[in-house]
Length: 131
Image (cartoon, rainbow, N blue to C red; front, side):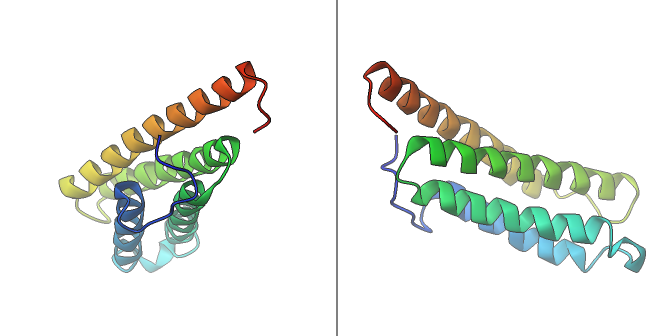
């Protein structure tokens, strides 16, 4: 497991989270005005959740904190993905396959890191170490 507490923009998940958020902010300008209180608001909110939660997970000292932050990031990413796909289905924007690759890669990375955190938590519990 990556050493907890070593937040670094060179981390691939953190770089992807920032790339996703940047793309989301660019997409917002393409959405119709009628969506400013709907899709735009939700996308902005979830983009901020994603980047801040990933950064917090990487900076966490304790595995339970990292697992919780990663869970928030996973939910934010799922929302971004679904809102993005909806926006493509209603013809507000065109589907960008490269963007979907980044999203899918991030989902896998988060799942892997959550499993690592869970393993660390379980190990600590079995050894009687307070996490």
